Length: 135
Image (cartoon, rainbow, N blue to C red; front, side, top):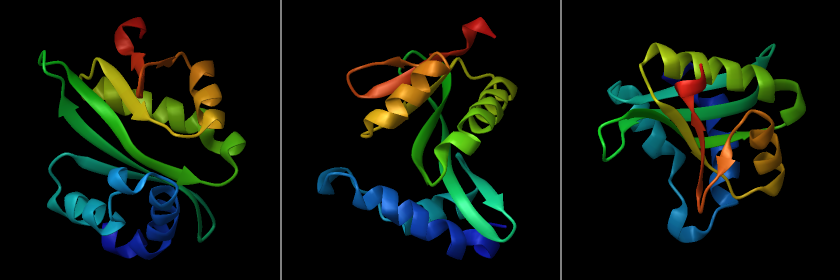
């Protein structure tokens, strides 16, 4: 499935990576390899017809204390107001189904920080986290 939609997802991921500091950038093809390995990465797409409006790369991982979490390692797209809420709900449901204790994401955009706060995320030094103990 990744190979079928990769050509539509990659440009959005590249746009996201281009906005980051050079030291923090990840080549989108690295995400593709991780997705193809099928171990701990998942891709979510928001589409309208054949157009890809947004893409997210999620990673299931563990914190140092052993808690299972989902990290949103890359998120890019247009028309945020149209898909932010459904994206949040789907991500939360995946996290709960995977027995995660929180969702962690990193953002460099103030607008995204405002959106995250409406869903209960708390801004940290770098990551934004949503404690799933409330659900």
